[in-house]
Length: 233
Ligand code: MN
Image 1 (cartoon, rainbow, N blue to C red):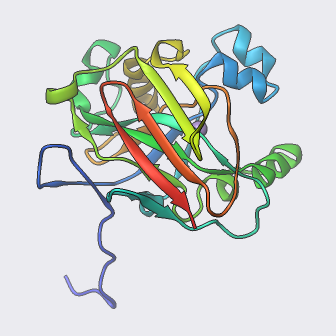
Image 2: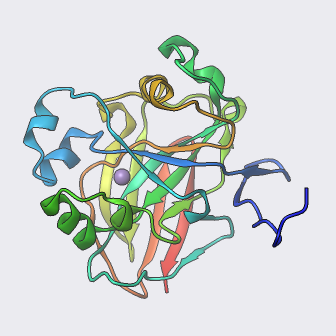
């Protein structure tokens, strides 16, 4: 195959305990998967009942990770960049119409991630019924720590998920509060698209989202999975 220019390098994340890196294919994100966050966003209906999960995407090369402290450039055209700490599912195998019971077979591992959001652009899009893409899928919008293989960390269904900014804890939840559990998310998403190895799924954020400014230093962790540090530059 001869390309008219060199293909772009594949975005990849470090893997805990391995020198091999995880090549990222696509990035899917679940909206409003913790009732307390759905409430803080004013989506009371979703918090009360279990509506079907809904998904949005980020480009695969929006991922940024690796290193002791991940430097994230404050993105353009926003005055309200928000943090959302999330458990990230990393797929090591693909499939369509996957049963809930078989969903774990697709999962390579897990990471701590930040679904960075230009909240002002997202709010404007919601008002107008426009797509969320430019509020959610900008460059470096998908921060991720190293991937912990499920062979080492299992398949966490409960455990603390938290984020601090400049040493102040802002988000502090538990994975057990997810409305849609990881195997259900994988199964549901696999009815919409054929999932493939390399896909990442951001599984939603607990309450406490808020704005970031240049110079902020973030720490985030999921118990049993790992941690990340990032700075907004
Ligand atoms: Mn999110």
